[in-house]
Amino acid sequence: MTPKGPFDLATHREFFGGWPSPPDDAEAIVMAFPVEGWRTSAAVHVRQERGGRLIGEVHGAGADAAKAWRQALATLSLDVDGRSYPALGRRDAVIGGLQRRYGLIRPTLFLSPYEAAAHFVLAHRRSIAQSRATRARLAEEHGDHIGIDGGTFQAFPRPQVLRKLGVARGLDPERLTRLHGIADAALDGTLDRARLRRLSIERALTEIRGLRGIGEFFAQGILFRGAGIVDDITSDEQLRLAVQRAYGLSALPDSAATERIAEKWRPYRMWAEVLLVLELHREGGRHAPVSRARGRRRTVDA
Image (cartoon, rainbow, N blue to C red; front, side, top):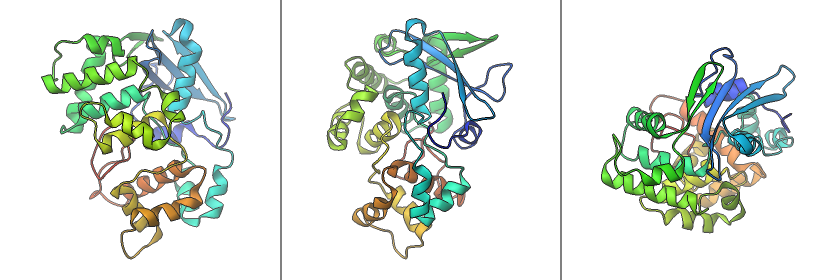
């Protein structure tokens, strides 16, 4: 596919890295994940040609290959028309400067709202290293394994597999119970990406907060960074601090003031928020590392 609007895979890899590459294609990335609908898992090998076109090879998905490709594109925010995104920077000089600094980068999402929700449960009150190790172990021991050019890539367990786990290394009983609830929500469609996007923000957040162990911070991460809301902003202190610093405000703006400033960012308000938070964290080590899930000033690894 040819992206609608600016997109550079190498830039995304630089700022939202962590993807493995096939053994013989170091410039490409591989995303391994359960395909929504949960019949199978896929490993999608993505590379970008010099002219900008993206080439994808889908492995392991069988009849769900087209669905897996669409899911991979959504993860890179490539299901959104970004052709008018540069015009935002011409309306707002602060955002324009950040667009130039970060190469008109788009948000990179979790591979699905299901995986976003599982991530937050695993990361709660744990270090980045602990949660990352647990996720990798779950994928290794209970996820589907897909081969590409001599390499093997592990997907996170499909929800019907996760739901049946009675015990798992590194998971206490309460955390496992919460994961069972996440798996149930994926299986009954509550966490379906397309469905969440169709709901109002308020209703979607209310439904997500109904899951065991999911509060406001996690709910916003699941919705905005899992489902991929494009034209709205989170209601959190981190965004307000980022706005204060980027716009040189003397005091921390309240939510109403932040929303007024964000009006100029339509119809890409979340994309602008991502740029602002990237810049906030770039300013110094005293800030938490960049997270794909934008919430309160709390560190989470995505």
